Amino acid sequence: MPFPDGTHRVLYCMESPEVWFEDFGAAKLKRGRAVVKLDADFAKVIKRGDYRVFLTPEGDCRGLYVRRKIASFEVRELIGGKSSIAFSYRIVGRRKDVRDRKRFPKLDVTPPMPPARRTARTRSSLDALLAKVRKQAGARPGRARRRKTARAPLSLPTLLAKTRKQAGAKAARRRKRANKRA
Image (tube, rainbow, N blue to C red; front, side):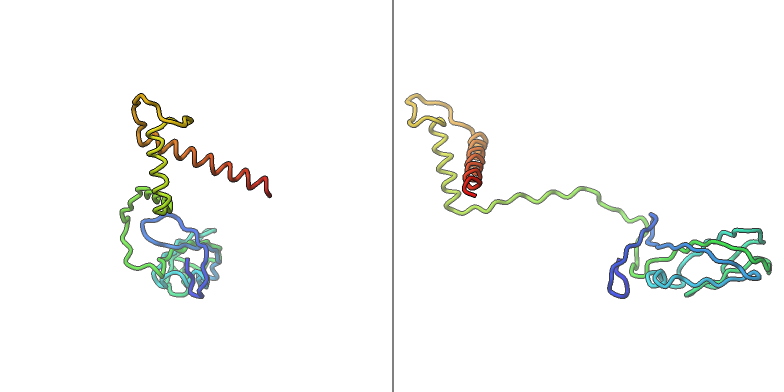
């Protein structure tokens, strides 16, 4: 993702119907209170003040809650408790660079059609191909002259397939000659 300093950074996200980033950490209460500063890089990519904090106490206490949230958040023990216990947290914040994103937008998953294969043909190469096809339509391959008896002409797909096969054989012979010279 693009970063404010102009670089691109890698972030991994859990799947969600909205665009969120998350971070994790741990801290410790001192006499029932703790202030946790957001990671500087994480704070650059989320909308400040629009994030959620999930707390897990790692010791016996009356419970924990989040009091203030801006560039840092304050954690306090419930009912004015004065415990000094460790806790872990998970922060989920909205991406700063994404606006007006719809929840569960529809997505078309039809695979795109591959681009048509194009070959550059000149007028003279097309004329030569046409002459070759006409010649093969009137004569059997391997015969020098025409038969006097009429026979059914070859179909166009058959003629094209034969022409392609011959062109491939010619190219192979050229490559073989070039390899011998080298």
